[in-house]
Image 1 (tube, helix red, strand yellow):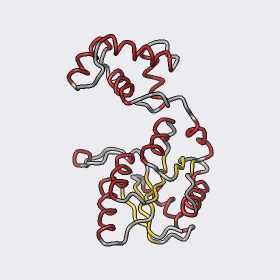
Image 2 (tube, helix red, strand yellow; image 1 turned 180 degrees about the vertical axis):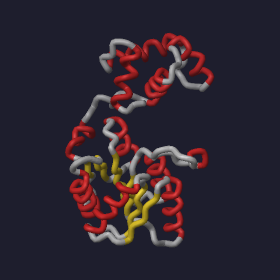
Image 3 (tube, rainbow, N blue to C red; image 1 turned 135 degrees about the vertical axis):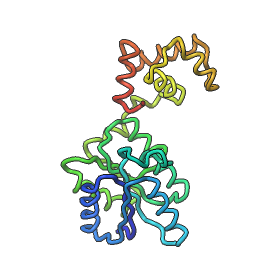
Image 4 (cartoon, rainbow, N blue to C red; image 1 turned 45 degrees about the vertical axis):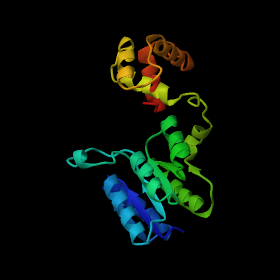
Length: 224
């Protein structure tokens, strides 16, 4: 079983529950932090000391507080990307309430996480199963309630350009203002006709009745 684990979670009650699970799994060297920046510093320190962590267990969302303006890493996803860059072989399990298909899929495909456990009624036994599976094999763990996520092909044809369009629509940039916005940001294609065609394509793809409906669907999928 894993020897040295670090937890990144900002709720004490959840930290205590997770630590108890790790103890039951005979993992005794456990550290936890409430901030992603602190977790990254500990992981860097452990690498310098040649006593690296075997596993990072992290939430995705963290409540903002007085330290928010001083933090570099705002989310668990930021932390995962930073850790993968300095310790590519560390095992990573996400422990979160987030159930958006696109975001979960992205974590597996873009950040190569090893497991995703949904917080909920069955999270304790699921976390135990995840720890055992990830440690003993190269298989990925995904909570049974969201196993459909990796097979979901709904968002496979969405690219970064589409995500930029959806993002700016969601923050209130009108369709007729998008051309100047994209030109200012050097995003191409940025002609009015190209933008209109792509937005219409997205509406058709997601079966959205209008732009507001398109934004709502995109939020439900975790695209924005």
